Image (cartoon, rainbow, N blue to C red; front, side, top):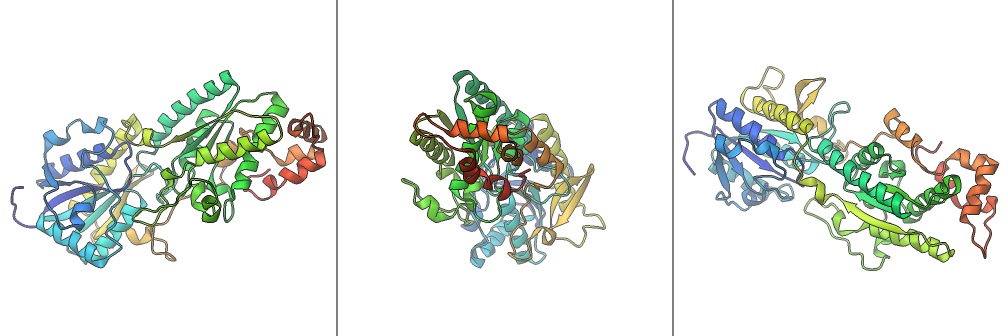
Length: 437
């Protein structure tokens, strides 16, 4: 790499999983920083090589490197989940590596873990480097103001919507159910966004549950919807969109009791959710229930996530990340009066205006980690989504004819289920879950 005097280069790195819009962010920052007379260094593989003290995995970026890459999915700088916050010596080595690269300004692109690493880098640097974080996550779970999404979310929602739309038609044509588990570590934004837009039969998200999520309760919910669809409309098809984040709230002993399940964690301590096939687990358990009563149901399981992450961004995200990239460069190189005293911040849009949020405002005071934005099940957006789902509701148990029809659907030739028995079995779905009407 060419030498340059001073620590005035702008560095860019990407952490966490891929999401549509990463390359557009890299492009916007690079072009604007170079327009302002600064060299730009693209750092490969997140914090990984910086932590190792290896500065060879970096590249000077110019106009030709980033022109038109905003149309592309993936990340030209790759990405990783390397965590420099676990050991002080790792963070010190990151700072040493950045200084060796003559980087005085750093833009990190990532979700809550990368944001936390960026905040700790600012703290450790004590004014030696200025850091801005651009919020990227398909989970949409960074605490941005209002309802504005993180970049990548709308692109992945659109692609997921198209896929679920196709699966719903397959479900109708073949008289079977699809259980579609959608990526999302802690929050159900993506599952709800996809399922609601597609008009899926039901959506299940972790925010519905207080405390631990028990597999038996999730299976009750799914079984109840299958029975209601048959009892009310005589149909044995449907599509359930299920948030992968349920796994984070299921007691490990319940998962470990399942055959073939092994629990592993990443460098930030999170469960490796993609290695736990929740769709297959739920399909197996629910199919077993119907088989045991002698009324088999056909369920196809599908996990959706990896096919979304590196897709090309839709127009919304292409435009959105250009604004964020500009705002990130503005914070780094031309701080205004409101940000002049900050050495680190997250850049976002609020009411059409760029804002730079102090990292300290985004950390949970109890845990010291990044705060998570969950689906607010008390808001109209969730309540409206619930109104269009087919789930067991309070009125199903209060209406005599409905309850009798549901009991008949749960009965077999050899065993009759009474309305009272059906109530005892399923009524907790409307008393123990949020949103039960």
